[in-house]
Image (cartoon, rainbow, N blue to C red):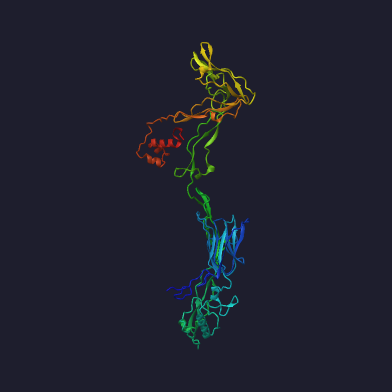
Length: 624
């Protein structure tokens, strides 16, 4: 059978959350909350007060921060993290109970600091926060006895008949037969009725059958034996104020020989009282704190830890002046650390040629973030502040002037026979070609080119006269012209009936006109030389929108803008094969994988493989 919390065999009583054997959790109340105040001043700030008699104390920071929790008594005695000295995590005595101080230091941990104690406390304690950064929130919780509740700890140490909260302590029982049994026992032993019998620590009253009355101890007639102190227990500590207790044995009064304790009256045995011992302080020692997080997530960083000179006294660890630890070598407070090797920036190609042959242009190069294993990774893996430029301006010097041309007109000037097509030509500063600086020169491109739409003899066609003036001087208007059907002979035109030309599309005899503004056109230079001779290069030309007075304009139709850049020389390149550059070993791929091509021996022994890798990394023949 099981033993209950009342130490009776077969009992099913258990201790409730209030610490009462057989209780129903109503004799106490839970106090909890979260301290979320916004603090501005650095230093100690009071969070919560823990009253006397509190149990199951839990003070926990809701998330990791650079703040610290502190604990001190109402009298001002520091228990944990007082006087601007940060204690190590561990167990600290205070307020009659033992507090466990936890401070997770793992890099991946997000848990904050905490104080835990079972209690009960025998004095009022104050919890503080050493404020250094925004408060993440402090959760506090403890249990206190309810009103008119007798603490089981007070019952165990109370003298017979002593009042508690103005009442006599009665045994916690609802069985009337048990009450009668206690009264009978009190009457037989001479104790006052209604008082709770004193129970020695570590001993419990025997459970007797209800139909029996406990035997009465016979009065002592003589004292042939008595209790005698024969020594003391061993001191609990070797230094720094420990404690010890006197040891009493039962001896013969005359011979002083030790006998069984049953010969002596147990009620007269002296209660051992604590005595201080080994009062001299313990040697000071270096208290080494945990290492902080590494200052860098990759590469060489620094980490720190707190080193305090401490000394044990009266079961407490105190922070003392550092000169007291001068007999010991002081541990290092800083250390280098490296979580992993950082990725680095690599320039994979040389600068390209400038985008323009003269004036200010741009040039580019390939920059990649490469891990310590040689793999190309995302740019975020490298320090963006140290990234080399992959694009920059380039100045190719002052530009010369060039002829700017429009496209040829779509229609020939003559419907049949010889005619011309026209284009506009203008001399302007050129940014993409290298002509003599003195100007465009006298070799002006032609503005007309011949065209012929076929012989005109015997041909029937519509003949349109010239347009009249626009009906308005600006804005939208109309123009008129004569349109007749004619047959052209050698040097002559014969006017025909209009139906003779009905199978032909008749030109309009009226059109809209718009005199002001006159509009703008696209002009462009000749194409530049191709940037590559094979495997796809590009060539460029400059395109400008000009108005009728040859000034820059933004009125041109963007959809009609001629191309400024186009591909060229797209045929494959034929690499030159060096007969003297060959692999001398069958396993040169291993040399490449091990990145040994940087050494002269392997570069020669595995020439073809190393050269192939070098061309691939730099962009074979300029390919990027």
